[in-house]
Image (tube, one colour):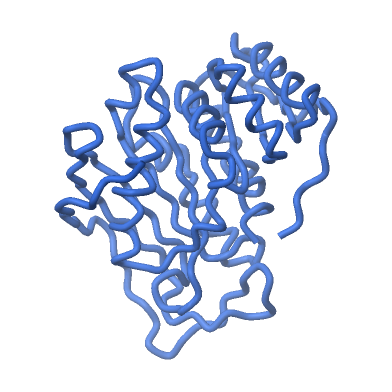
Length: 275
């Protein structure tokens, strides 16, 4: 994997661990798979023999000792994740405050990921959208969130399909964007990229950690979003401390219409660093 070059303040205009507890799986979508196999192109390879070219969604209900609660997690397996021996890339996507694990599917991120896998621009990947509601209820929950995702959610996913912890990205919308930045700042070596979409502020300590690790960061917001200036400042702060951040602004506000319009772009960013 080759790190993306530092953007140097580029502003782009566009038109400790806990044992796994009980896991309950609820299949909400499982489409039929070809028995003869399909050669679906995959990033980094000419072709990928794929007997399961259809995506599968599962809802996991995970007992979390970290949060002393159950967490409802929507897990999306892109085409070709369940029938090939190579470990899959992993993307954690955190929702905004007042939303839940259904926000990211609603803005069509799963559809964008499936298309990218099938056209060869993204490797087979597992997209994980947790509710993790308790992480939104305190001002310093990044360590708890990290432990929950890596030690509680991830082993549950590995029971279904192999995942590659060296190809793990994280991102979020609004408050989820701030949490993604904070979590990445606590453990930058655990991630290959972080996206903060229409993000609230993250602590300077997290931004400094991200900058020091050279972790690629994408911040973006709509032109009518009151958080746009803050996001640009965070990008500039990371770059001014030797980091690798980019701020992108496009038409729209702080709403699902804007995030839906950016779904393919978000996937392209993550895919670039998951190869």
